[in-house]
Amino acid sequence: MSISLTINGETHATNRDPLTPLVDVLRDDLALTGAKAVCREGFCGACTVLMDGQPVVSCLLPIASAAGRDIRTVEALSDGGELSPLQKALEQHDVVQCGMCFPGMTVALTSFLASNPNPTREQVKQSLVGNICRCTGYERIIDAVLAHAQAMQGGG
Ligand code: FES
Ligand code: FES
Image 1: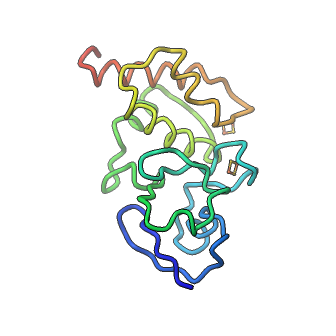
Image 2: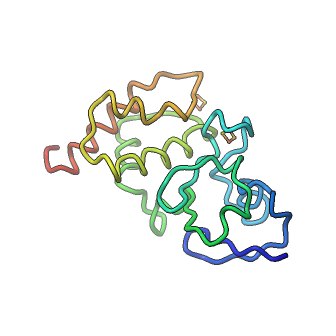
């Protein structure tokens, strides 16, 4: 059975088992390696992508459930190689994270800011509970997100 997936605005047909986790199709078939398969248990957030604008863990999302939905990966955040304003803000604030956790965090924060354009520090902190990093602090990330949000409001 062919399943049609819409990934970053493009349609892809796949004959994979309908229960195949979306992250495997992204990484293995489409070379979209931004989403990482780390825990595969829905715990770490490294595989986060957007489905109809909402963050989802693609390690637990069967492709049958992703069919017909608008899937966006971290690769879609930039435009022709130009980083998104949030990505630029994270870079400007020297947010140094590894490639395992950072794509998922960036995707989750993008979705969060779309519905919370002027968040409090606590709200930003809460927005990251599903994205685990065990090696650095979150403070710089939160600083960057707040500065970015303020700038977008015309206050920065
Ligand atoms: S790999 Fe999906 S949540 Fe950890
Ligand atoms: S897990 Fe990526 S910097 Fe800690």
